[in-house]
Length: 348
Image (cartoon, rainbow, N blue to C red; front, side):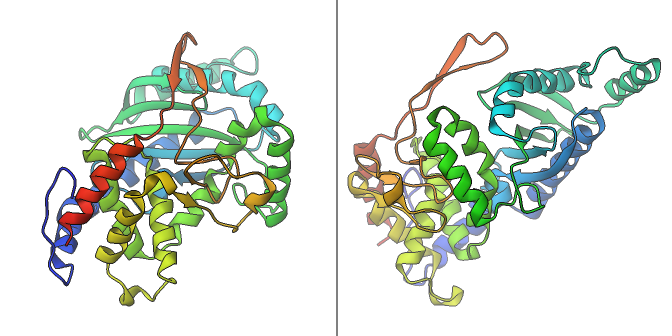
């Protein structure tokens, strides 16, 4: 498959062995991820002046689709002090500054006036006793990204994401159907707010993928490994959605009724014809109400404006001086189709 060439038997045993030995995260890796998560969460609760309603593990680790040694740690903090997107838009720059200061200096700078002597002493203690080191701290449009290193040398790339508490259900980060309908209506009416809402919908994305059977997740992991090995600009989430749709095309058979090899084979059949890719759901919204994108698409079931196959190429200002731009790029469809055809041939 791709940069690694395997010949699979009819039973799929060789693919299963490859996934088990090279792709699936082992217990030690997951334990280290859990330790990093606990350290960050505890630190945030200790130093932040904001009221954290809930903490959500996002990304591949939160969804259960992480590839061994190749996944970042995304941690979502739902903040009670931020009640709306407008509020987030006003406060996000300052919050990122505060997070940056906390990570580099060990504590938040003051957001509520002069510090008491007791608070100054507490912060000096926190700075001296911070249980991890950080490096490569940078600000992206909506996150703080850095590498954390534990005393035992374990390192992990981390993204911290601050979210407003938009839920009316009483559980932060959990949205009722009415919540989602209201969010989508706001996104439709206010295009300038869509990227902010997109981050708020991250828990919906996590829930959608996390609930899938383990064989689908195994197929996801090996496809992610293939895409990364071949340096394809296809996001992990796009691969997750493509695998789920492939599984659904088999009419959601019982876990014992389909092999991961068959699912992976179906994924590459779709990638081989990427120019005609049309993947969508009506789980949370009807795409007819928002308009289908031109060209190929893999639509985010949590966001009617998020086409994973052709990401926005909007330019963002990032880093502390706000002088660097990031341009999100689209996958090379012709190379993707060609490599998928090679991968598919190697499976037979």
